Length: 329
Image (cartoon, rainbow, N blue to C red; front, side):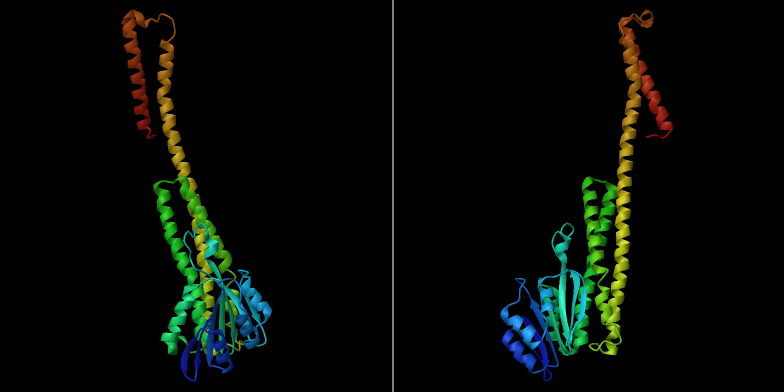
């Protein structure tokens, strides 16, 4: 647990739970507490601080311990509890994308913000440091801090979509060059990632829409535009995700078409070979019979053999010339 707060016009940070409790009792202008549940559980001191000092409901804390991976917004007497979801890409995320999706729980009330998460979120650390170094801008009021957090969560989808765009371009080049079986697996993995993003992102607007309401007592009217921007950004993301979904389906169709074309080319070559060799089989079968052919009288026994070979060559050459003229190869 760590906290940054504004008290008597000065910005301070605190990492000791007992001191955070004393600070909150002094009613700072604004305090932001961040809790990283490394072991997926709250300590006794953390639970006491949140339930007794901040008066958070035990059901809200239970939601923090057992993420549902579905957006949520609930109003309580002295605070609003919510859960939003973002993406922090892990290695090999195209095959194990579910591990890259995180849940960020938050408590917002008059003069305080508390964020709770079971994964280490690097962007929160960055925002925390910015609030320390530039408090006049980054820690000006509750609305700014909350907006910065939401903006980072929503922007994580855009970064992921950029990665997917790069992957789609790579797959498109590979398909046109040589549609191998491995490419099919990569397309299906990408399709799975896009559908997972779509499933997660579509419902996030529910949470952000709450902070755009005119009757919201936590957000000043002048800052509604900030949260409307987040809401609009999510709507645009859903459209972008739908477009990527259509693109990957198109790639799948292109792959199947490329495989079909490649198979057709192979079958055409095999058919030409079989057709060219068919006269050879007929001629060799004809002259392979144990009878005396009329050609023996003209060419003799050894000359007939050369005649048969020459006949095979002429027929094969004639067929190849005919196929070339028809542009069959």
